[in-house]
Length: 206
Image 1 (cartoon, one colour):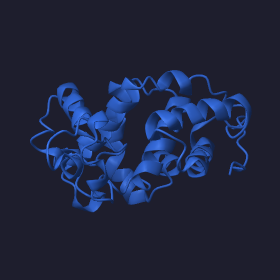
Image 2: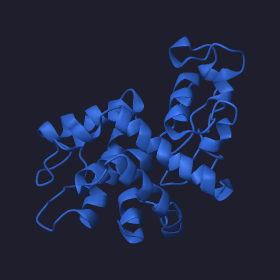
Image 3: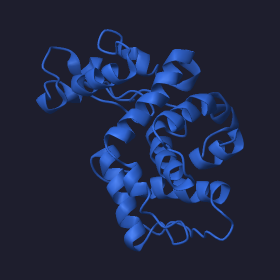
Image 4: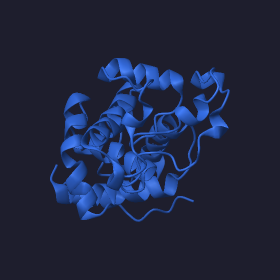
């Protein structure tokens, strides 16, 4: 994927795409996100979660996650400490522990390694882990399998394609928040990555 293709797929600025390209390419390689359909689906989700490759940390304080045992937040301050970070918003002590083991980095002691508010404030390590953690989450949720089911020659926003895309969205978000924007980013990216005979209409989902 080129920088200009990443910009189109992420609906980001040229500068953000250029900065993140090597880190996202490494995530693609490590986690087998290696077909246009997989990359489109991954980037549509990641770009929505990060505001076009800009935010690497949740805007909210994380206080709403305090005491959430389902996230492993059992110690005082865990909600804020383990708020959403990375390009796909890794959240909660449990997920921070798991991604620490996977990437061999200590995100429990240093949670900010997963993201430093936004791209302008991130170190190279934070950018790298923001991208790799997104790939890890995607792989752990088995979302390549659903991306493989999408027929790129048919509209993504209707029929079976929409159901598969919604399944990916739920795997990332836990629901369908921002679904129209996620679909829009897929469609914009399709023009840059898919063959010219693969058509994608404007989003009609509400």
